Length: 133
Image 1 (cartoon, rainbow, N blue to C red):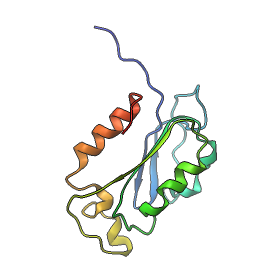
Image 2 (tube, one colour):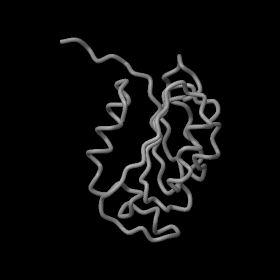
Image 3 (cartoon, rainbow, N blue to C red):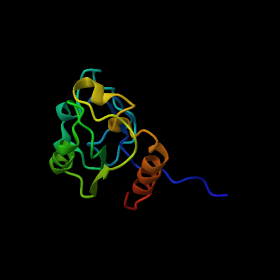
């Protein structure tokens, strides 16, 4: 059995519009070492998106109305990145309240991809392997 091939990837989890985890330096193609974690109050728009050079997948829910990460801003994230390969995906459907304010940032809202976790994870895996979401 062959060993798995290392695939450079940036994995960022945005929760309530904040970025508590980043697992690789997105600004370098040759560095796969973890970079320091950003401050817990840093939002995705605060990081130097223009410096991202590796493939970028932006996934959000079309009905996400979270004030810190609304779906209508996903395209702007990708446009700011310098990645040669990028894709923006708006997931649709699923249950959940579409209320406003911080309640829209909870896991039981479209923001959390409730009951769509497997579909979203499969799309992310396809992208990481070089395909389309």
